[in-house]
Image (tube, rainbow, N blue to C red; front, side):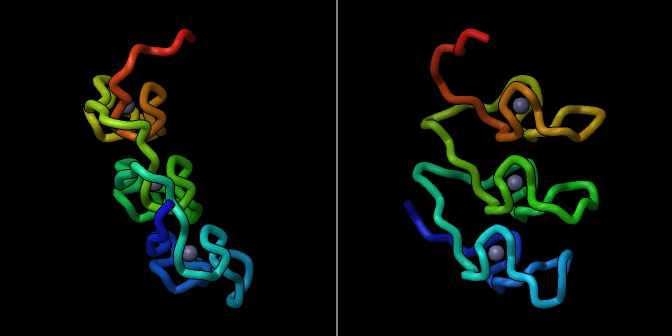
Length: 112
Ligand SMILES: [Zn+2]
Ligand SMILES: [Zn+2]
Ligand SMILES: [Zn+2]
């Protein structure tokens, strides 16, 4: 586990959008300004590391939960469905194939 600066509040510890009140704490880091992430990890391509849900929604990124990074299960390769963008063409929702990560683990596919 590694501590990184909270992407959602940019390390300030307060809610970047003042959703609940001006004094509300960042819901991602709980006001600490840092979050713990598991290794190995990489930048969340879906929100481009911002921790904020794309397309103007003032909520945490649904892929990384606001941390700006996602855990990877090991060496991966670019997702063939979204070509590494993590987004579904057309509607901008997280790619269902890679779950918004933009990469898929290099291992046999799990049975669906
Ligand atoms: Zn935070
Ligand atoms: Zn994200
Ligand atoms: Zn994908």
